[in-house]
Image (cartoon, rainbow, N blue to C red; front, top):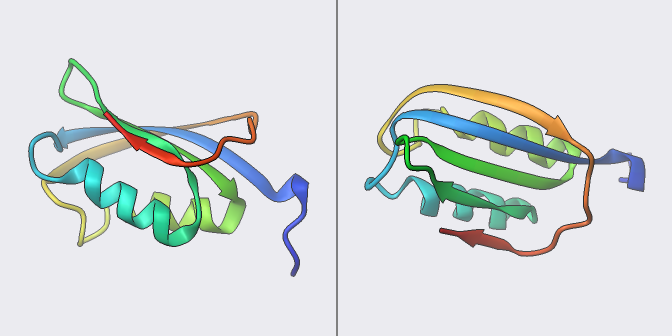
Length: 95
């Protein structure tokens, strides 16, 4: 199947648990870069990490699965996901 513009997906995932100070954002960045996704991974004041992913739907789904997979650093307690309209974002940032 060839990706079409309608296949583009944007999600915001709030990851809770022990995910700050353990390399979690850099793990997400590596997975997103490998999948060709745009977005960001940002530490929040409440201890969660906000992950934004945008790109082809199947690639977004694969990285979402990795957020709490066995290779994720730290200890993920939960991932709350919401879909948003795609914005045509490019690049990936960590903050």
